[in-house]
Length: 194
Image (cartoon, rainbow, N blue to C red; front, side, top):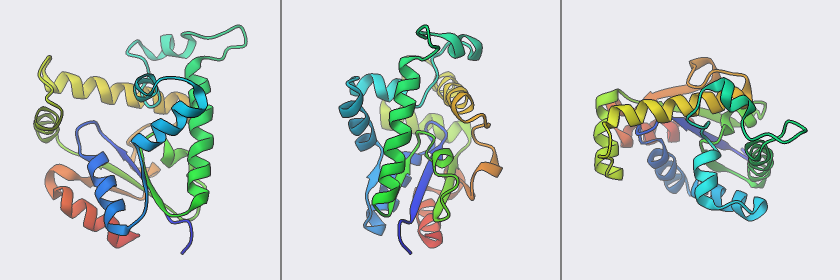
């Protein structure tokens, strides 16, 4: 099969990024995550930090505030500009050949692509909290609060730009519980469906 694409959407702290990287490595195909941020930064002129924070998350304010924040007289915002660039780059990468794309609404952007496996990685709160403390050194606030905030912001961003609900099973071909299955079993499952 040509241009086989895997998109990985994930709850914060579920290990989706790691699962995406390991899957790509074992399949011998590129994984676009931080690389996607770099490409968007090159084309947009925005810093990688700004893109990492704004390219997948709504601002921490409410959805209505987000819808009208920082817009010019035409109703466009910097975030809209990032969305357009991100959208185009994801389409271009999917045309180059097989790859794994982590996050950034790639599941939605490539939803009409026949040869795209859309995966959602989730886990229970306890496993995710433990993971972000161990992996990212999260300690400033309760890990559970941080997880809820990140997921809420991802969901708002996803809904704003796709008009769909983030994490709803009908948007994906498969949903995997990384807390119950473990990282390696999730990778093996995705590989078996490739």
